[in-house]
Length: 199
Image 1 (cartoon, rainbow, N blue to C red):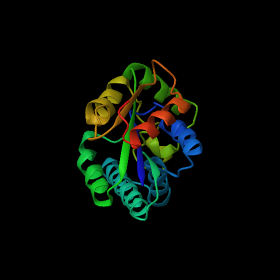
Image 2: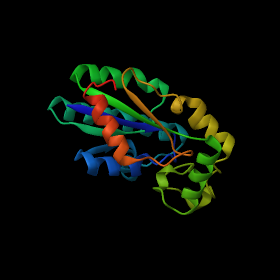
Image 3: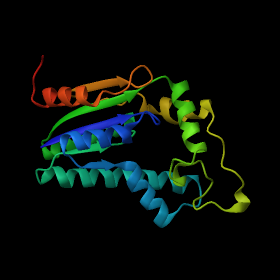
């Protein structure tokens, strides 16, 4: 079985690319954001600490579901903005199931990615649980959520390790602010790497 890990900073287009790869390769997708949104819809959070715990829980559920599918011989695409602290957990899971894997890492200019992130939020294209609410569901007396400044974006995502996620094994890096991800070319490269070909 094969594991395709799609990682990278927010606003790099991971979800869009995952859907395209899923269709091209006929593979299911497991995405942390979907788990996180379901947890937030069901449980909510009362403060920043509870919000962080729900995010950690979504990560654990994601890896447990991936391990369950892989252990029964199913290949899949795993999507998350993993950080450097996630590396041991992901590698231990892969070692337990003995799967082949390849990482596709989406990166780009942090300033442009920040602008994309803010614009996406302004258009209401994201689940409200991803906003910087003080609690969820938000309450009118809370006022508007804090603004996602460029400095906060860098500290919370780039400097926190999401821009440096790297596993042992094959990796494809795509700078999405320099080029558009070519799904057909990525599929060919994924298949080549999973087959163990070196050229």
